[in-house]
Length: 100
Image 1 (tube, helix red, strand yellow):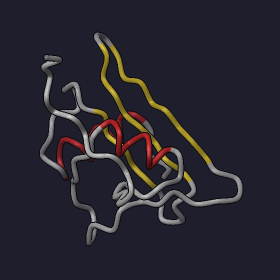
Image 2 (spheres, helix red, strand yellow; image 1 turned 180 degrees about the vertical axis):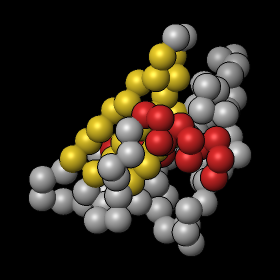
Image 3 (cartoon, rainbow, N blue to C red; image 1 turned 45 degrees about the vertical axis):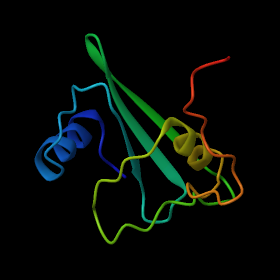
């Protein structure tokens, strides 16, 4: 978790074959699962968000190594709140957009 903006952007581009300048948010977690870094490109520069937990751990999904997984905004909020991204008791998203 020592990498900064350039190092994380290189991981996104070289290891994951993704564009760090896209509108995606890239999330990285350390081995102890108590630190997260979020990398995001906006207009003319990168944002690097860093979060360290003092007494607990993030419920980082097991994905068999350094593999890319796609999560929704809702799942990201769960992860940042210390919850598993697979909430069995959560309400399903409503996709219907018609009132009457």
